[in-house]
Length: 124
Image 1 (cartoon, rainbow, N blue to C red):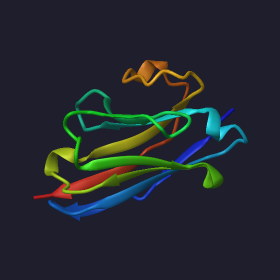
Image 2 (image 1 turned 120 degrees about the vertical axis):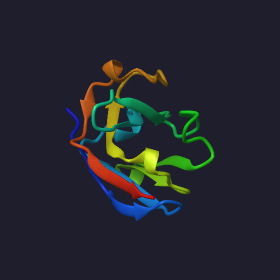
Image 3 (image 1 turned 90 degrees about the vertical axis):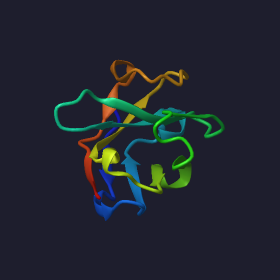
Image 4 (image 1 turned 180 degrees about the horizontal axis):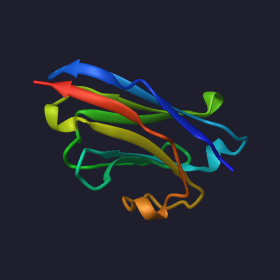
């Protein structure tokens, strides 16, 4: 069982930055593939980025490539999402997700554990 708790969301102006954190419980954090998804009002949940269990592989959605960076700190059982050059269209609730499979997948249904989300609002 893994519990995920996101933090770091807030209100920021376009062009600004935020860093989201996702703290995971459990001793097997290093075994989990970790991902970030986001969901805007009235829209489906959207893949943002994923990082492998080892931290050596990452995948980004085209919409955030070059602006967002995912990383993980095994000692702190935490995964981060550094978001730079934020745009109003980045406004959404951001969720982290975890799964024991070694697949770097964009499909939310394949992730077993989810956090409650943190709101990110980017003003123009």
